[in-house]
Image (cartoon, rainbow, N blue to C red; front, side):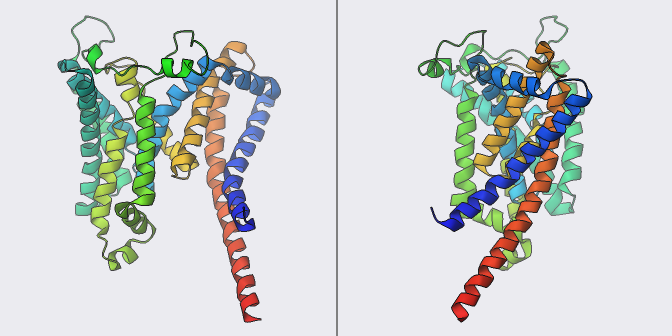
Length: 370
């Protein structure tokens, strides 16, 4: 490996390493102040993560976070802040649950139908913000925030009463999706290389969908012409327009694609867990996905690392509570500190990289002049 390649790798790893280091220091200080032993808390977290069942929990948690991170990253690559992933995936999960519970089809067709409904609803809801931006100049941050409230506090709240399953339960939701519309777990695949997974843990089959999303995102952003136009419009829309790229079309494409991916975030619950939408449906994944995308620098591999890190921290919260080594709130502190430190660290490293590139260019020019 050449020295410049090593230098680039060092710059790439410096920012996340700094962010994690700062988070550990800050969390340790908080633990000491609260009367806990940081070493004992971190030891419990690591020992718990080494268990097979906990690894399954981490992957199950990281799967929707990764999909959510990719959805947010598509907007970021176009210099758009799609803060509406939260409302998009909840609305998509709701309509996908209703559609999936209303029919009984062959397994592959049934699952595909649920996925397509989720992607279509997510794309339509996100695309609405895109249309408002290109036709009326409405900032996507404002419109997506408002659409979040309309989706969760208006449409879902109103229709779930109409379309709920008539079971008489207090927390009754939509009609459960039949077995033909459920994704099988991946336990048998894992047990080939490990041991039998206990404690009722099941590795969600939606993990395969997340892998497909990641590969498609990489090929689209880094290997396709439309992806190049995305990146060009995001970097400099004026230069892109001069090069024949229509920025408004790119905005619409970005919002539609981001929403389509956002629609898949809730599929772990819909296809692998509760098989319906109810009042306890998991929330907050859209906002966490924004943090995952920022920490992962909008790259497919970076988002994987960030999603796994957040999944690890989420899985550690219960362990700390049970062991008594620390409060589970320390996990929230670590997540927030990592994100804040990452934003600062990336900016610092970026400036150092620019100085290093300028220094290298000056040396090359001096060498060629002599």
